[in-house]
Amino acid sequence: MQLDIEKINDGTGAIVTLRIDNLDAGNAKAFKEALQPVLDANKAVLIDMSQLNFVDSSGLGALLSCLRAMNNKEGELKLFAMTKPVQALFELVRMHRIFAIYNSREEALSSL
Amino acid sequence: MSQAQLIQLENGGVADTAILFSGAAGAELGLGLGLGLASELLPLIDRPMLQRVVEWLVRGGCQQLHVVLGDEPLPVKALLGDGSRWGCRVTYHHGSATEHPARLFRRLQLAPERHYVLANGWSLPADNGEFLQGEIPPGAIGRAAVHAQGESICWSGWGLFAGAWLLGDENSNGQSLESCVMQEHRITRLHMAQPWSAATPAQLLQSSQRLLQQHGAGIERQHSSQIHPSATIHPPAYIGRHVRVGANAVIGPHAVLCEGAFVDRDALVQNAVVLPHTYIGEGLDLRNSVARGARLANTALETVVEIRDPDLLSALPLGAEPASPPAWQERLLALTLRLVLAPLQLLTYPTARRAQATGLRPRRSRVIQPGHTGPTEVEVNMASPAWLDSTTEPFNRTLHFHDTFYPGLREVVRGRLRLAGPAPRSAAAVGALAEEWQALYLKARCGVLSEIVTQSIPDFSPEMQLASDAMACATQRHLRQAFGLLWRYLILTLRDFRAVPKTPSVDSSHAPGVHRGKSSTVHHRSAQ
Image 1 (cartoon, each protein chain N blue to C red):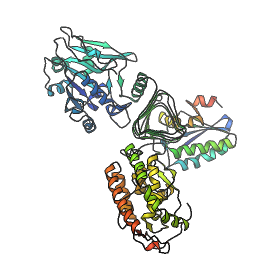
Image 2 (spheres, rainbow over the protein chains, first blue to last red):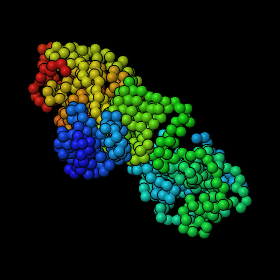
Image 3 (tube, each protein chain N blue to C red):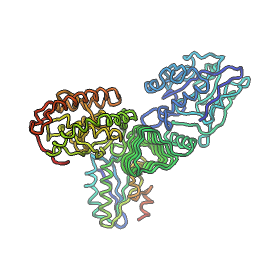
Image 4 (tube, chains in turn brown, blue):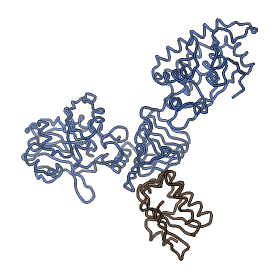
């Protein structure tokens, strides 16, 4: 699972760039396991979705699980630079009302 | 769209021949939908775009259509046939995106002195055909329908042109046909509104909305559609044949549900088109989109995405129409049978009373109702045919008549069951069956009669049950088959009834008409 992690906000936040094309049943579990330490260590996590072209229900479940984990510790999880196919899926399943989604990295950073 | 006027020409002749481009043969004119089906075959509300085009041309006087096929000729041929359905002649020609139209026109052996209508299968001019009427000025080649597309003007692919020009060298200088049409000064270009179009998802959606408005902006609902009472429909909306709308779903405004679509509970379809036999999953939010099978074209985001989760978006099996309730003729027959057979029901009462006393047969049961995904069931006032279950009891046809068949006729009148069909089972019982068996119950409505109960000596082996249910599914549409079963059943029931001893001391399990199921042990069933 390829994730690039960049620290922000004096180390209290992180930007995670997903270097994967698909987030589906095949790698959803690995994604959660790879992201968990980042969620534990940061108050705010921004996920760069620009390279993700496909998400299925397993991938959505993994993202939801991460959101829940951050909400439980009163942290923030935001998504940005979502590709159109993924955005269409999010709108279809109404996940765009659950996640904070931004068009760009700058917008996401300014929301913190 | 109102009827097009006859296409009259200056010399009084009629342009009765059209050249109709379909599929990739018209690629130069712009094609591409991403939904896995050629644009012209997509329905605009209630019928394929191509069909609308042909109807329009025929109404306008075209008697001969030269259809130029692209990469997928079979669906087009299947739809149009030889044209006799519309009162015209259709001949087919193969074309390719790389072949210049002038070469194609020469292959069609067009007559230079005549005029021909050029058309395409995925769009239709919005002016009711008037642009094809009237005289063509001397020296002019013809006229073409154009419309604004953003900042530019483009050709709609429709026009009336002289055969000589179509065949001539000016048309074969390597430029696209559209370029030739737009540059030729002898062609009158008539500006009109956006054509009706299925060329892209956005155009299909827009055309559907315009057509809904044109039809009165109300709710148009076709027969055999099923809408849950708690669902909400906001006009304008179109609900096609065999559409199912689940509980609390919200449809519209500007929603088109084409034939066989299934919108599951709590879903929202707004400003969207659900193409035929497409399943929209529970709780989904479909806006500004065109959905076909597992593909979703979001026109606002200008993207097409394939959904791999069948419980979200999927194609329903073609041909698996929701098993419709019995027709009025069948219901009337059931009502008549209840009246005619009432005396026999009274005569079989003692047998039923004895069985009831031993707790053999509960009088109510749950029966699965057909559906595309996920079973639903209703409680009916008739005994389940218990000999089909693992806990068996001997099959008693007299008892079956009194507790299952006769009460079941009432369910036929109510539309819940058919006269003949797969054996009535609960949803839980169907869920426990093998997959191929479960599929039968999703396609056909349960019946009061089946092949097995009309056998002289019923064979309740699993293979026979499957064969009986499969036969019932295959023949359910034919009332004649049900008549045959009914006749045999009544003959056997009367025979068995007359043979059963009337004195209570005789063990009925050894009487004729009483047959063992899978087990030779008789169980006293508890109420379900």
